[in-house]
Image (cartoon, rainbow, N blue to C red; front, side, top):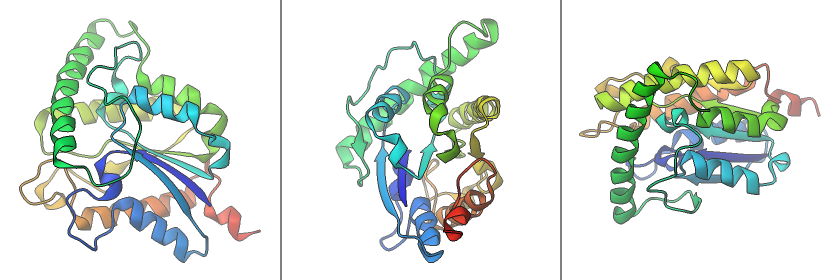
Length: 234
């Protein structure tokens, strides 16, 4: 079974003590326990523009499952310039301190830009196409193998406001196209017990395990996904 994962630093378990699995690790372990060999190709730290560009270059028909862990940038207009981009797709690996600082600075700038665009969208709701619409249109031929995750909760007020708005947009756009969405709100809430100590944005080991197990359960039951249940009948 070939799995493609695109997300942020949670994909490799940023900040977790050594020996703890990320939510993707827990998800894959559950699939393996169900009797399937799994091969994972993962990318992290991509902007929405980089995500669409990366997907355009990959042989998507070769993946049995495509997991996209999206963030608040999904509501950015597709026509907006990809400023502060790192310029390349970054395979999953623990980020260096320099990369963390660069990503942190980019996140703050992106949040301000998206907040401004979000406020403008209330005044001009049809002024441009959102990045998520472009992405979902790109994935239309493979939608039966696609699983979207709503943005993770945050204890940072502006991040949480953007997350809630992004979640609503994602659920609406995915429903139009009959793409499966795993709503992380059903598992993770913006409360301290879900996060690393003294960290307002990154999930702790218990949250990763809860997410991984819940994601696996959803994957098995999602009606529009070709799930592991189909493999059992082979």
